[in-house]
Image (cartoon, rainbow, N blue to C red; front, side):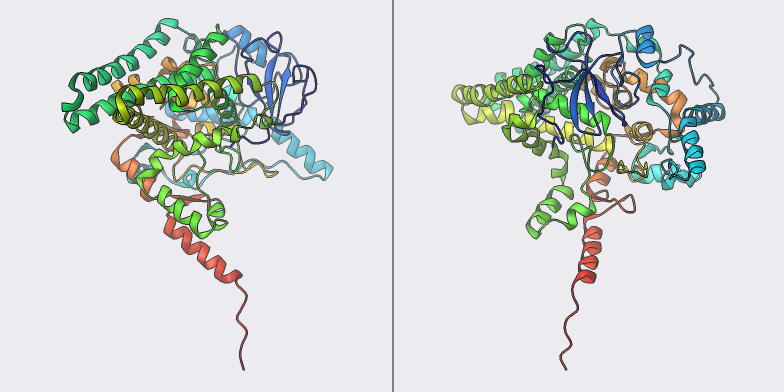
Amino acid sequence: MLRGLSSASSNGLGCSSSASCSQPVLRVQVFGSRCKTLSHVVQNQTEGRLFCTRPNGTNSSSPGCMLPCSNASQRQSHFGLAATPALHHHHRSNRRMALNSVAASDAAPRQQQTEQASTSGTQPVQLPPGTWVDALPETQRYILADEWGFDMVGTSLPAGIDPRVLLRAVPEELFQHDIKKAVMGMVKPLVLMAAGYFWMGYMHSIIPLWQQVICWLAVGTGYAGLFTLAHECARGAFMPQHPATQSLLGTILMAPSLFSFDTWRIRTFNHFCEVNKLGKDVTAWHPLTLGELSESGPLRRKLLRAFATTPLKLLGSIADIGRSMQGWDLRTFYDLLRPGVMTSWIVTGVFAGVVLPALVAAGGFSALFNCWFMPWLVFHAWLSTLTLAQHTAPHIPWRMDGADGAHDHSRAVVSGTVTLRMPGWLEQLLNYPNYHVPQHLDLAAVPFYNAKAATEAMREKLWPYMSEATLTPKLVSNHITLWQVYDETREQYITFDEAMQIIGAQEQQAAPAAPIVG
């Protein structure tokens, strides 16, 4: 659900020329003619509003979710970064020392604030705590990795590191865009989809069931690769030199999924700024919490059990379609965003109301079932599984962004995002959606075809703090059978039955004592 998007406007464009913000802010390009000269759209994470602010304005050097300029000099000028590269050490112990030194230097302002607070008698600044795996020896972490279906379980990144510092681990050439590679990313999924549709049409009514299933898998997997490109358009990384064409392409590619492109884009921005933030990172994947379960009624608890403890969990993204529409109420969106939102709603509505009925008219409901519905389920299985696996693990905490500073953005990005390994041919067909850490660090800097190389470059410098897993039946089974409910107090996942036992005990303690009859 989109939260806190104000509809109030401060000028004719629906945006103000500047904004003050004490929290990290979100920078995104304006797609279209509105505010495109000397301005960015900024989401104020404190007030929940969208602003237009000049690149040299008050927010231009704020850390957080970032969209850098197209080359090194512009990026360094925009964010105030020095050209000196960091983290050059190649020996493992030296790399850890290098990261700790960077963390210490980057956290110096916080330490200075703490010292000033202590001398002035005010409350000192608290650095976020680590996790329970930080105290485990490396051997024990390897054992846990094997039990969980992981390849590597990382410890917590030192607190207080600016995301811009971590980006220096990525070679400059990986930020460059290549239109040929972008086009090839579209050709491969289209060829796979065409092959599936051709075989279904060629065999028609005599196609065996097992071949029909293969065709569903081929078409659905191919469309998942196209959806990755629509996501690239949404974050501004597919054709950044042509934003209008990029938005049009993303709107068309996303329509068969029934997601609205512009609402997906807004929710994507929110996710990148609120990574693993409890109660706020609700637009991509948010765990079912013990508190939410305890506040649910009997019927809702039964529904939650059905979706949290069965393979239906791997289709959870379907429910997100309705939430992303915001009740078809434009008032929930800032007025600057309404034209784009309305356009993407219309395109999605045309597909659902015109294209799908035309498919039924041409081939009956069997054509709708075979050519769209079943491949659509396969696509959602990929979307749900990848999103779930990237943001869920027993050692990854979801924390609130309170006064205690429990949530640390860089730590959530590096240590709180799981890199999911898959066969190379499958990664290519899906357009590398499993390498997500570079996206979390920088909204639109690294294009999808460089995501794997960028992740490997970061791994060279940050390997002690990164977690990796291979997509295996064991990993998927653990997500379904073990990691069902998140206990936000103990910061760990428990099973649904364990959660109900805790809730039952709490309800029994809270129940008034029965009167004693003498």
